[in-house]
Length: 99
Image (cartoon, rainbow, N blue to C red; front, top):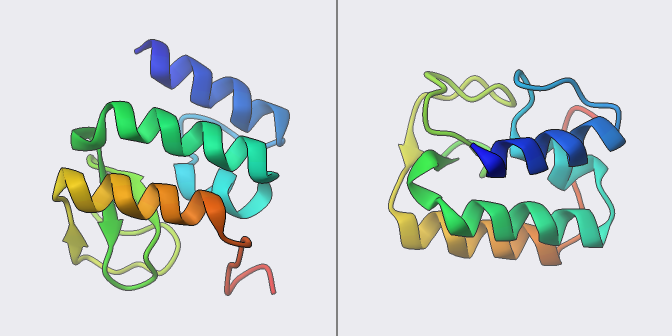
């Protein structure tokens, strides 16, 4: 749960509501340092997250559908989740809804 409080602090700093927010929002709205912090937190507990097969968002495991694209197919392999979170942290943010 302490990881959730760190994510909450980062999301609050960005003006994003929690617990409704997904880590992907921080990847889109956060600066590079924030994106790296979120990726590191995800890497500590990859079993709590999954990658959307529709839009490649990293979302919480408990979400039944992707809040970004409403897809329902996910990749939940921990190695894939960590690799994708680290990839998102290093790339420029992009979101089809904010462009």
